[in-house]
Image (cartoon, rainbow, N blue to C red; front, side, top):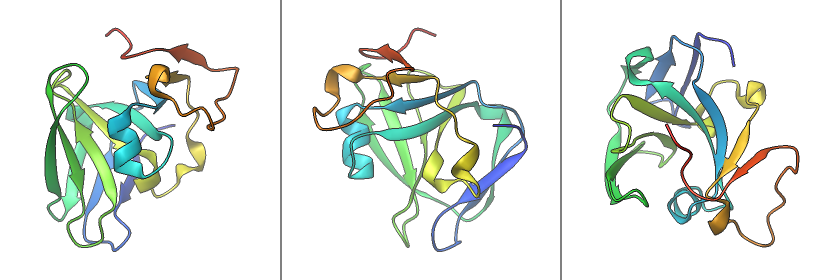
Length: 138
């Protein structure tokens, strides 16, 4: 996914821009991501925090204890509920963008499935992608 790219929530109250290429593109099958999306996984872009800027609005944050044992902040729009991004406690220099919030999600090309140990048996995972049972090493 070439930079720059932008995104925001469904109602338009919150906007962001990313000025660097993603470090990683993945689909996360952990239970936290399943709860957040209401689906089998969350498609995610991992970005350097320095390349991410909120340009409009203020998201609402929800803190949870991730599988790493660290506190993760999940950002969403308080008006429309759209999931936007995460601030992982295990990677304070990172932002995890929810691909559904991108203006053009068609460019997303995941390289791996993570937390496959939590994947739902009814979910189809692309067999060509690397499978990582839990969190990939940094």
